Length: 233
Image (cartoon, rainbow, N blue to C red; front, side):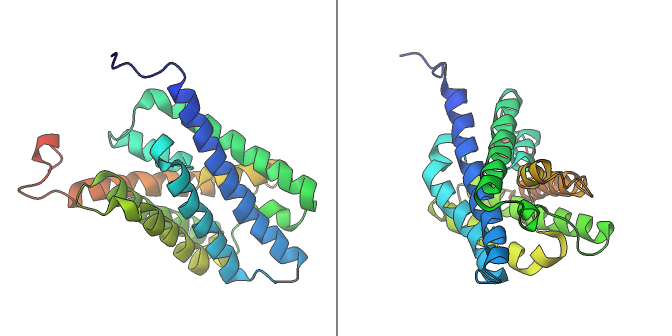
C-alpha cells in the first residue's frame, strides 16, 4: 500500500476545522447574545462555561481527524514549533476564518444585531487587553502543547484540560478583554457586526502568546533523558 495520504485528506481536515470553529463561534458568541436578549439569564459564568464546553466536545469529536486547532494562532504556533506542516497552514486557517464568518452571519439572522454579535472589545485600555490576550493565549497554548505533543501526558484528557483552560480564562478575563485567545473567533463577529475598533489586539496578542507558549513548553518538557532525539534540549 502507498504511504501517500489520500488526495482529499487535507480538504477533509480543513472541513473538520471549519465545523469545530463554527461550533465555537455559534455557541460561544451565541451565548453572549442570548444572555443579552434574556436579561442575563445565561450569566457570565454560563458564557465562560459555554466556550469551554464547546471546545471540549469538539476536541473529542474532531481531534482525531484534524488535531482540533479551531484557532489560527494555534495552527501557526504548531507550525512554527515544528509540530505541523507549513503547507497545511493556509487550508486550516482558511477553514477556521470562513467558518467563524459564517457562524457570525447565522447568529445575525437568528437574533439580529445584538451585543455586537459577541465581538471582542476591550473594556479598559488597549494595552491592558493586549497583555491579557497574550498571557491568556500563552497558557492556553502551553496546555495544548502539553496534552497534544507529550507522550507523558494523559492524551484522553486533552478535551477536558483544554476546554477547562478556555472556560477558566473566559470566566476571569472575559469582562476585561473578551478572552478571545483566537483571531478567528474575534474576526468573524467583527466583520459581520462591522466592529473593527482595536481588532488588531486579537491578532497580535493571541498569535504572540501562542508562539511563546508552544516554544516555552518545548523547552521545559526536556530533561537529560527525554526527547533528546528531537534536539529540543
